[in-house]
Length: 225
Image 1 (cartoon, rainbow, N blue to C red):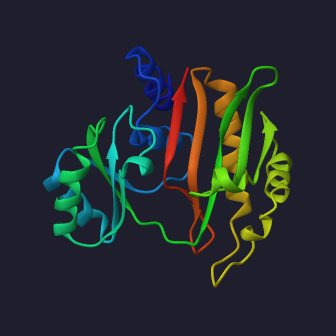
Image 2: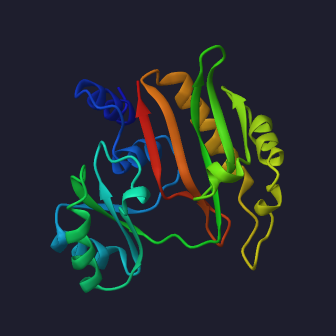
């Protein structure tokens, strides 16, 4: 059993319905999907040490296996620049129902946010999703779907299929999105859908495009059957 599969099997054995964000990103990274650098911290002092290791500014998040919608409960703090901010926000985050620990993450630059993921159609099986991400994903609904498995041609067609496809071109001084890396991410998500029956859904939002064009998953949710 691979390490990635072991993460899923352990969660299922414990009766969990989803992975924590930290475990979800670790799982995806073990499949080759690039993710932000993250460090788990049990308390405020550990969070300060993690921030110093990663380098300010950082993102501070509440983490828990049942805490799947962190933004809605104020569980995400961006652009944290000092130890004093870390301590104050850590005390607040740890009081959020469902928060089991803290996660300190690197701030990934870039103005563009995409979304990708996996869902399971009752008739056709695993389907890969791609589109415009961020907080307006549900409002703009600029997404496309393909049934897994995906070829590189399928993945590139998905990129061309969204209305906001020009966001993948050079943008406000930032390089064009690395389409080859994006294609690999979409293909891998389809592969996970084909090989990991225990995974019901995957939601990577946002998948940020760094100024140099690299795609980086900065938040992820993996729902289990």
